[in-house]
Amino acid sequence: MSTTPNRWAAMVRASSKPAYLAIADAIADDIQAGRLAAEQRLPPLRALAKHLDLNFTTVSRGYAEAQRRKLIDSQAGRGTFVLPATPTPTVVRSPAAVGLIDMTMNMPPEPQDGITQQRLRAGFAALREVPDLHALLRYQEFGGGPADREAGARWLGERIPDLQPNRVLVVPGVQSALLALFSVLARPGETICCEAITYPGVKGLAAQLGIRLMGLPSDDEGIDPEAFGAACASLLPKALYCNPTFLNPTTATMSQARREAIVEIARRYSVPIIEDDAYGFLPSVAPVPLAVLAPELVFHVTGFAKCVGAGLRVGYLAAPNTRYTARLSSSLRTSSVMASPITTMLATQWINDGTVKLATEAIREESRARQAIATEVLKRADYSAQPEAFHLWLRVPAPWNRIEFATHLRSSGVGVVVSDAFTVTGPAPEAVRVCLGGISSQQECRHSLEIIEDALEQMPEVASGVM
Image (cartoon, rainbow, N blue to C red; front, side, top):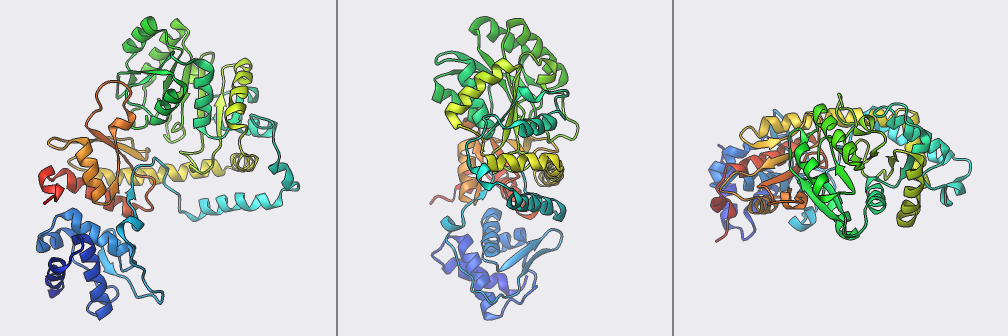
């Protein structure tokens, strides 16, 4: 190595700041003094960690901090290089201002290809051409006008053939639809079954409404039919909630045989099924929805949060019949009044002109790329994932426990969610959910996963850094 790492080692030892900030300061000092030139390559992370006698995570955070200050840049396959100086002075932000690399929110990766960006921009631009802007600022027919329901039925028709628009309600996001369904199907004190490890949004809804959730054991193929049958016989549940495709958080996807078994039991006991199909459009070869197998029992809910973007708060609820559509309309009107006419118009336009399909394909492709990075980086990790999902379920090895592991990652600049948030019944497993979509680039995804992989290889006592 050159004399640069030796100088950095001395600066880190002399600094009163955390080591990763001292590393970034040392890089900034060398650039300002002319000791590092634009495009000059910096030492590899592991080699520098060994030279500085620091762990990989600390050095990685130092490079990440320097990158946030626009001092350096990393390129896959080439390494880390000094960026050319810019006329704008660099503002050095505190760690609190910089924030975490957020792998907690399960958002889709944002497509950066020119065609998708152009189509999305065109949709927003078209809003300027609406003849009567005031019409978008008035109260609208709840559940969407005829054109909006037709567009929703046509989009859902890719998953549920022959779906009629009069069975479809336009809603302000999936969560509002779930709130209405829980309110209509169960009263306080009554039971709704779900996966034992499930989407945390339903835990909050049940607690708010005073509904008891009964978590059912599941495996890689979905809910255990025997457990569901036993619950139906003994607990008389008012509904079964399930997230059968790319389950949040475990990514488990209910097999065809398991779907048929669950539907048969639901029919036997006349138990309605709430099918949260938020991720159903992501697999290139998607399983048959429960709503196709049992249209008379299933309330099918989905939206654009996972296949376009979370900010497009438009979803669709397909009810078994128009009688339920009327009841749900009343509940939804009470809780959310209506879906925004502006975003609903945008959603309808994007369905009709193919933008939704284009964006979904771009998200699917980017998700594949990020899962491929996870496969490469997390070689020794025990985790569950799907090639076209944008999250994974990481089992935490002993002697770590999930709380210590997540806390250590947070101190290293990466946020993940512990299993307690998703656990309905039984002890929380030693696992965390890692979201690959919300971070800005494949490069940052790789960097974050390297921090996680390095943490997995450390002993908790060594990683804690407590003196």
